Image 1 (cartoon, rainbow, N blue to C red):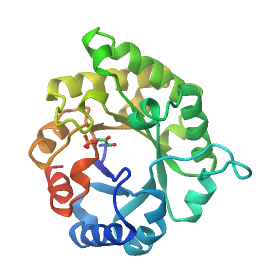
Image 2 (image 1 turned 90 degrees about the vertical axis):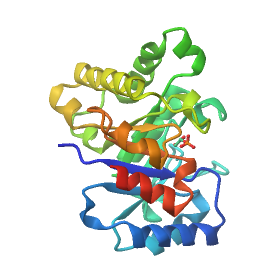
Image 3 (image 1 turned 60 degrees about the horizontal axis):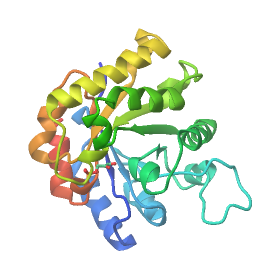
Image 4 (image 1 turned 180 degrees about the vertical axis):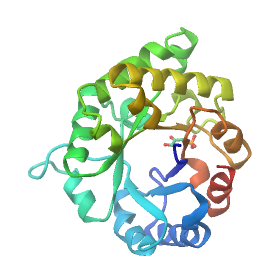
Length: 250
Ligand code: 13P
């Protein structure tokens, strides 16, 4: 059985004080025995504060991005080692905003993923199609490219440290959630692709989160789909009530 995994991506929001308060509210609201894994993904500057607040709790800590080099003259960047040092257990790579606003390629995303694994950190690899691609019936083509670029060549053992997040770009921050059928179809396609690249055991074990306008009132239905193993939440992760409502839905 895959344990539901819900992560809140705070994106470029929250002062350090607001982050401290939100993390505190989640620590109070999330118990270790719900059977759901819960993580928060604050902006870099709030990571040390959030790490302190969630210490000893059931809430896990991740980063929104990473740079693939270990150290040196890379002004503005943060390495996987720095994230581990600050208390992160994972990071996102390939978020659609990194791909489409910051113009990150599949090649760069792969290097970032390997840098995280090299530090013993877990990875949430984000994939998803643009609206133009969905309308042109090219969703599977795009997912195939992104998943193969991200995962081909890893070992089955390394796959234990990988979560996949399917986030259709047109559903992110738009209030336009994928239908349960659209989500299930894409997740099933991704799982079968993982089976093709690795094997059925790896595919059955890998968790695939859905992301894109997940709210307390649609979370339970989405996560009830057989191949939807949790959620990567943006806007609704910024308020304790709505994020805890989504966790309750799992
Ligand atoms: P929204 O939940 O705001 O649509 O954001 C989804 C997302 O991008 C999470 O990474």
